[in-house]
Image (tube, rainbow, N blue to C red; front, side):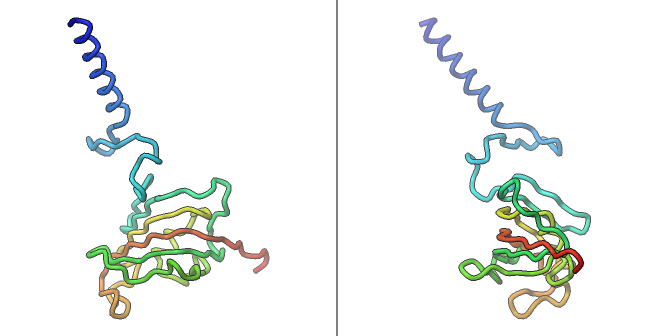
Amino acid sequence: KKKKKKKKKKKNQESEGRASKEQTVSASGNKAVSAVPEEKKEKDQPSQARTYGNGLLVEEIAMGKPNGMRASGGSLVSVRYIGKLKKNGKIFDSNIGGPPFKFRLGVGAVIPGWDVGVEGMRVGDKRRLTIPPKMGYGIKGAGSKIPPNSWLVFDVELIDVVLPKKGS
């Protein structure tokens, strides 16, 4: 009986130890954060998040190749995306299943939230951009699908980067 109790006690301690290794307390508070490897986490869980002073939230969803081309100002980027309203999750735009959307980064060709949020992505990276109204479509909104003062959520995947030619 004593051996069984010792064995049971040891098993409990091991499982408690494992649980404490899989959870760590974040520096920003007493919230438990899982330290389980990424492949065990639920799909589309952000691994890193940055919030800018203007309210823009950029979350890293998946990392591409470490040596992949990096999007920088002036480069021509190709992306796949899904755009949703933060308020109700309603999809207002998407190019999934169609050709990638191409634009020149950092020159105002897209809403400011995209210029800032796509900067630094590598080919294959996936990010979630939560864009405040002032970096999206502002007080005017956009057509009938995006009401005025809407927060927007875009899931963006960088497909390709073409760097600007020297001298242009």
